[in-house]
Amino acid sequence: MEQKILDKLTKIKALVERGEQGERKAAEQALTHLLNKYNITIADLENEEQKNRFFTVPTVEYFVFNQLKVQMFYRRSIWSTTKRNRYCIEMTEVEFIEFSALFDFHRNQYKKDLKKINESFKSAYAHKHDMFWDGPRNEGDNATTTRSKEDRERTVGLMGLLEDASFRKAIA
Image 1: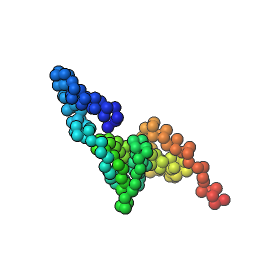
Image 2: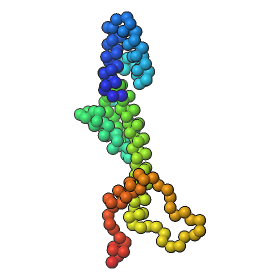
Image 3: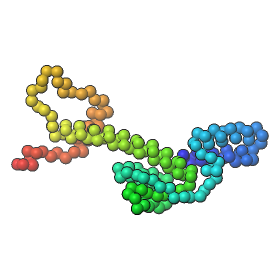
Image 4: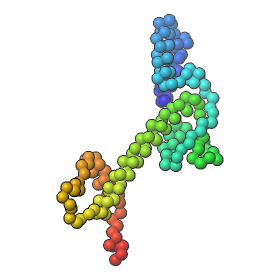
């Protein structure tokens, strides 16, 4: 949950507490709607107590976890527990809800992007080093696959990052 949403919830809550009848009624409805939408309670909004929150983070996802930790809690410390890949950060309930939602979104997106890049890297490596069958083909073999322009551009871009190494040069 972004800070602007928390600010909005806090302002609406203040309107509920000190607004006039019609204004108060509309504010109550808006507050109820937003609390339900973000799955929090008024007590969560008011509770500033920080607690230790634990996260189990696979090594491949630690980069994302740490970047979000730095983004949201720059000066707060993070420590690992005796269990492998288990980390702890002190945060409020609302911060925990926001951090958890962000981490879930970004970990899933990170995994999808890594998978896409890995496939492109394999293709770039094979093309860069000309690792294809150059003999005669059987009838009916479909040696070409249809790839999107984006995939081809990504492959060519990755090929440019790869070293110009050759097996024949290496044994010469």
